[in-house]
Amino acid sequence: MFEDHGSTRIDLACPRCQQLFKVRLRKLQFGADLTCRLCRHEFSAQEVSDRMEVQEALARMHQIVQQRAVYSSPKRDRQERP
Image 1 (tube, rainbow, N blue to C red):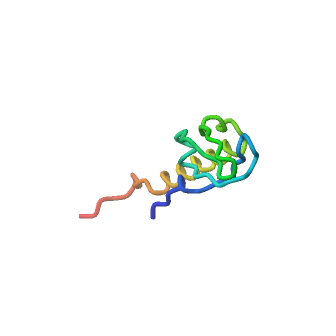
Image 2 (cartoon, rainbow, N blue to C red):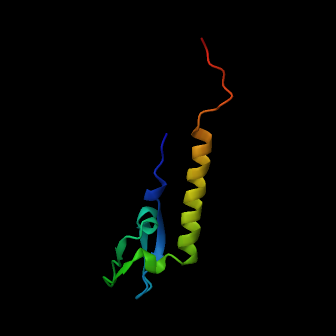
């Protein structure tokens, strides 16, 4: 079954007020615009892309996706049945 890891959320601190809020990995991956729910500060995901927690979360997501791709790929050594 397909699992959408891009919809996984991580806690991210607003660059202005430091309030934590949840952000989908998909938004971080594609550099979306974000808005803090407390102070309404608008910023780009690219502004926070170098943060350790963002890099770790995206790396975990890529690793999981790669592992799933390997496990779901058809085996080449299977024999065709007549």
